[in-house]
Image (tube, rainbow, N blue to C red):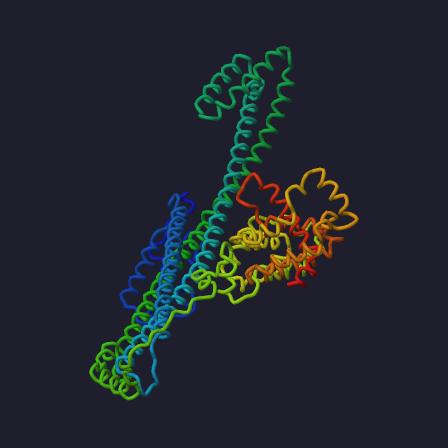
Length: 628
């Protein structure tokens, strides 16, 4: 291969590779021009750097990489290293941009928050400390802005370098693929050439044996001797004899089968073998010429071009990386210089530096100005005694602190305390029933929910005045309202009808009138006329006796009983709907407003007698109360 390609000229120009077929120029490397212009740091580059660059190009030009096995792979690997360095620079610039951005944003946020929370009086009244402090914080805001600009520049450099690397990687891949396609084509051509050469040798060997066999008309002994000498010569050649050995055996077999063949047959077979050998020879020489032409084109023309392109790619990437790093250094220096100018402006700028800002603070003058302003606009000390101010509790808290209990409280005590004629719980419950429950079947007989009844009890026990039974949560089940009313009457100490009037009222309904037979006959007669038995005693006498008993009650009990019976009279007026006549109402309210005595043996009869008392009063309510 060295004989075909030649050696590089030691006097070749920098960046030029020479081959026997001509020159292959490297790609021009225009680092600054190809990446968007020059920068100030390039203009000030030392002269020795340019001399080193020229020396490097001259040294590289003296190496003929076309003569080095694996020279292209070496350059491709070197180009990969250059691109990897660019990628590492991209990562560094991107990370550095993120660091600067985070720092700038944090510093900017701190400065803005400080300025926003700063106490700013009118410009004419600012102290020297406030003025200096404001300038110092504003300087930090400028520093933050500088860092943000530096971050943006680094991010743009990173993106531009990343795009550049991607484009050069594509070029590197294209050059590598081009070299591989040429190598593959050469290998395929050499493989076909080897097959043609083998076929050519086989055909020649067969022709040679046939020629030796026929011997040109010589005696058999001479032919055998010539065949023996030819066989020895054939074994002296390396691969050709090895490949034709099997062919010779085949030809011997043919002669063995045609021992009686004539000389003419052998000559005809020899001629045919000669034609085949010539055809194989022509094919072999044609492929040999084609393969050598491809090799010369690749090693003398294409490979130098590819090597020159890869070499130019390496130099361009290296120079571009150097330019990018130089730009980074210049930008970094500019950012640091901008920070320095912010902290310490140039002479003649007329702006104070950070140290001068602090030096302008006059603490004593600030204190004197503050005291004078305070004394001028401040008020006078109030030396008067501090009055007592009672804590205003919420309504619900006052109720819990001082509840107006009614359950279990004597009737006269709670009415005197609340300045009422009738307990508010009875008034409000009666109003709710008359408004929403007169047509409810089984009113006062049905029980409400225990939890809701207890909730109403607790609310009434705090302050009955604030309880509103007209809301939906209460009227949705009127039985809760009737339940709390019955609970109040049951827990009223002494009952609604005092003990002093128990005996008088019960005496009009003796126990013997409650015997089963008598009671049955009395109940049967009651369907036609109220209380036939009462006619024996005199209805007027009973009414008068009941009126006298009620008249003798304390006013709170009498007024409350009158109000309750008037309400129950309205309830029984709707008995067609609610099924609650005077008898049913008396069964519910008899034991409640006229409790049984302390003798357990008489408890059952007392309950029945109290029901009859309530029924009688309810049936004759107008006559009894008109007699009061």
